[in-house]
Length: 438
Picture (cartoon, rainbow, N blue to C red):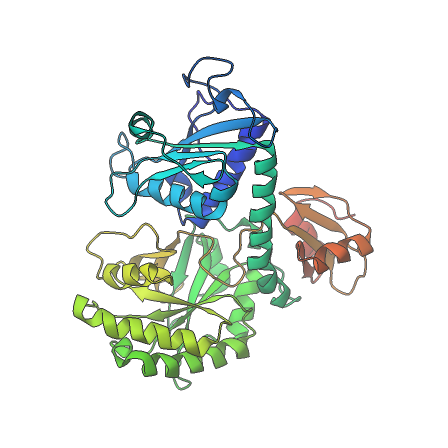
């Protein structure tokens, strides 16, 4: 996470910052949206006992630390981005509020009452403190609270990723699957199909592809999917047929969702992925009720196996996000405005790549629900050569270590704390590792 050059932190402060990075991702905020403004530096009251910034103790008796976070306006670098700070504070309160020593942030918005927590409970810090925390978010935690928060977010990450990872084909060599990050470029295309090699060479790392009624030739095929996953692309699923389809309401959503479910299963799509349904026109305010009914119908048809997402302009995507669905916002029908919560942005339409007509996209959240995309910071990733029983390497926190004890590895996998990637050859594995495999 970015930070001011003057920031000073200790061991506990650094652990809080790591928690904040995970909260930022869960709040669908880009890396540039939230930064660390202060730790043990600055004036937070008399030293050494004037503030948790300098290290006091929580009610549980363990030592404490405090860190401040801020947000910068993308268009006006010298001003604060109040929406981003509110999104961060709201996510922190949702995920960790009941095990946080102090959370203090005041917003100018009428639809919330600020974020004021002390020892896990809502409290009144007073007008002076509230005013002083308008331009930043203050977070303080004790060491025991930090440990509990790390465990909670680790369990959440494992729950959200293990189903996806276990279902992936063992024959896919996914050399860059753990390197996906917010801000990277992706493609979507329909009838034309650029080669995975040329797309990868051009710097693209994820692809959005279509599900549709069976007669539609733009449907994603299994062989195409295999080629994309093997090259290392994350792949998203998008149901699309005709403009205005979502005006058919709940029954239309059920019908399309049922066929989308069948096709996703046939592709072997892991449970928990998102299927985005296209609102492929400039949805008007008076049409949103029908669209919302369609999304509800699609959700019912997917039977909890897959999440519902919505592709469309600003009005449609914002309504979908408000309703708890994923959002893929189109460049069209948005008037140059972006909903900061959108998981994917389509930023450019109709240009040529490898002779194919394609659109450009930008990943805005690791929780977009794409195949092969997950926040795997807390997972161990084991690699072995196809047909060999011995595990040759393990990757944890981007550090390569020897791992020869298969029973130990198996226990990690069975506990949902890791995944196994099987490579076709030792040479392929070594190309991924950048070193010789032992």
